[in-house]
Length: 181
Image (tube, rainbow, N blue to C red):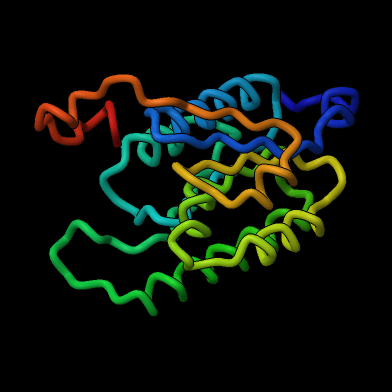
């Protein structure tokens, strides 16, 4: 199924999902699933997540219309990752985002953890905004990540903040497959 022109004409906003609560990537994936069900083409570029053991990467391979491009480094394997490597990886992901956003190949582009790449100093907000400004006219963008700059909050059309009230991490429960990744 392919989306009709009327559906595509309504796209073009920037959504930002942020906060210390759980659910930012999950909300973006819910939107991706809904969009794919309407025939829209979706890509998620993962700024800080490597290819491998993420449930969303495995599931995207089974769903027509959703592509995930993991472009982060593996911080969990025990190999030391330098700040310079993280900066280079984030800049590579931003260049890929620029290419994808301008191509018009996708209707929805999710920049997963892009907010955190800015917060951690791997990217500058102004560089991300410049890429967003150059996107094809009817491309909807979703930015996720715990915290972000006020410049990105001001730039976005929709900002949702997930607030942490209670989480089992506080009691020592680790990240769980299928729930957190």
